[in-house]
Each structure stands twice: as C-alpha cells, then as structure tokens.
Length: 368
Picture (cartoon, rainbow, N blue to C red):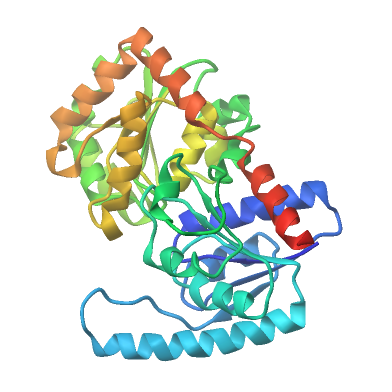
C-alpha cells in the first residue's frame, strides 16, 4: 500500500500521522510512504528523523482579519496545489491522509481533484478552518472526540476513530519510565509539562508552589520546563529552596514521553488533542490548563470534554497561580478514591486501537 501523509505546524498534527504510518508498517511490511509538509513547519525536522521520505511545499495560514498577506496565502495555496499534484502523480498513492494544519489544504485538495481516495483526521473537539474546508472534498472525515461528528453536517462519511497517538503509548514500558527518571518503581509521580516548548504561565506557577511540594508525602514531582525555560526555572527554584530536593525532578525535555506517562499517577498539562489521546489511552487522571492562545479556544473545549466525563479537572490559566495549582494537585493525589475513579473514567474514554481503525478505513476507501 502506498500512502501520502500530510499535516504540520505542531507535534499535535505530526505525531498522529507518524502513528498511522507505524501501524500500517506493522500490518504491511511492503507499505511505502511520502510525507508532504511545510517548508517552515516542525515537520521538516521531525519527519526525516522518523525515517519517512519528506517533501515540502511553501504554504502559510490565513489571517482572521483582512490583510494583504491573505492574498499571498491564496497564491501560495494555488502553487501548493500544483506542486502537490506533481508529487502525487509521481508517487501514485493508494490513499492520502491529512492530520491537520494548513499544509493539509493544498495536498488533500489536490488528491481529491486527482480522484485519489482521501481522509482528514480532526484531532480537536472543535474543528479547524482547514479541515472544515476539506471536509466537502474527502471520502472520510475521522474525528477524535465522540460527538464531534455534528461539526461536519452534510459530510458523506464521518467516522469516530479517536486519535492514533493513543496507539503509540499503549504498550509503553512503565518500568523504563521509572528507571529513566531515577524514581523507585511504584512511586507516585506527578508530571507537570507545558507542551514540547514549555509554557511560561505553568513555569511561573510551578516556581511559586515549589516550597510546598515537600508536603505532598511520597510524591515525586517531575517538572518538564521546555528547553527555553529550563535554566531560568532551575535557577528560580534553587533560589527559593537552596537546592533541588530528591523528590523534585526538573528537566528541559523528555525524549521517552510514552514511558514516562506509563509511570505517571497524575498529569498537569495543556489540553492538546494528541496529549489527551495519550493520557486517556493509559488512564491517567489529569489537571488540564488549556492554552488561551489557540484558534477557537479549542483546547478548552478538549479539556471540558474530559472534565464533563469525570476524567480531569480544568484549571484556567487566568485562575492559576502557585496556590491554586498546589490545591488542585493535592485534592487529587491525596484522595485515592477520586484518583482511582478518574483513572477508570479516563481509560474508558481512551481508544488505544485508534491507529488500527484509521488504517482499516484507509484500506476500505483505497479499495473503492
């Protein structure tokens, strides 16, 4: 089977596409892939590291107000369609799948115009502008949240698949997670992470509550700052505490996140869709701090879906400080019954077979 993958801008769009590729590889050793991404997106770095063939197009997103830049974006879109058609004709894929980001626009549109079976995967509870546009051209719209189907009225085929990142973490080693952190097996681990690049507001709240962490008995606090915030955060905590205690682990980045998640008792995080797929696949109770700086406030919609079910507590950034963050953590990690209930509900929301479901749908439309 020959597959074109497209999606970019953030890891939340890239890693689901990679997860689909890995699932198909496990089923079909002869599968071939081409990943078409943006020249300036994170995918231009991450995808080659995954040993997937990568080609790029020059594309930017629309501004949500009148701007001369939008004229340039339209011209780039049209050029992107032309380039995508050339790449698609050369590669001759059986199916094209887009996992979000504006780079999907010209690639998936070109596939539809060439009559190549295509899918878009929407990670968020509220769909983005690009996927809303593409939904009228593709064979299948796949959604990550049950109930999101209503955002695609009139679309011929909408399928609830979950997010394929859930499959990636399903078999992660808990033992390796503890070992990589240098934490005794079975310890209570509270993981605080503000996304791959870190989050200034979460950093500041963590620094503010650092003096109270020792009162959480038996808890190892693992704080992932993001590379750009690491030195300043480490120094600020040292100034407050004198040194870093053994129960506090401050890291710039985690390379083996699935394994660390498998060892986690409670997570504090943003509410990106791919990360939520991972934590529900493993059944991790969560305190979610949605980023207020995303389109359509979609992270809060993602987070509220988990909170409504009982798998998470939502703490808005405007209400967050060291005290409110500490209270939120203590209320869950100190209440075993609540933690167990949240974990059970989270696991029920997870869809660890998501990548397999998507691959099965790819096979179905390719046969058509």
